[in-house]
Image (tube, rainbow, N blue to C red):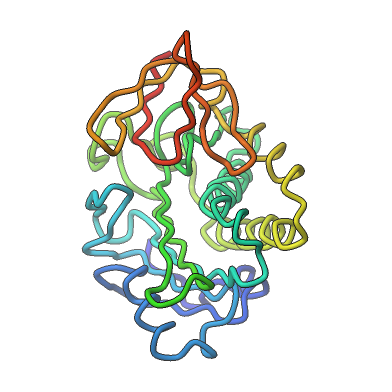
Length: 260
């Protein structure tokens, strides 16, 4: 399904700027460059979207590609200047929580379940349907670009790995406009709560969505080591707390695998 001729009117109601491109290498790279060149032209919650991203990037510098028309790539500008510095680590989790709720909206009446995998992957029935990458605009700590890639119309044959899924693969025709609108609305709400310093509410809401909490996990740490244990909770900064039996380890970055 190509980008609709009338654009995304529902989503447009939740953003000061919605720009659609037919194809690009990376929406995040485009938005970072655009914000750097014209900060005033890309205010808070501005959005760039395409259904044909050729050289997307995921966390840990992984590549992210999909056949044209089978996935949405969307990047949103976040003005972090109003969010206290100690709370800015919640921004990627806020995006993951917002997208989890947006995906749940597509699943109504279907019987499938959407959950958040720490820190910001979205799973449907255990399969990854969306990945998120947040990056600061170079030269500033106050502007963050949050990119998300959502598998919409990808067939099972096109899924890159057996642990991935898509709306089409589970028999759902995605309403892309509603998905984007729900995502923007929820992301704006959570970011506003962070700006007010209401981290307890954000903490509670994100932790309820997080399928990682309470699971046995294996975490590939940035130093190359592996941490195995039970993910017990998120701490005040959104980091994952893993109980390895004799000691609790706070994980701020790592590649998490749900063991069971």
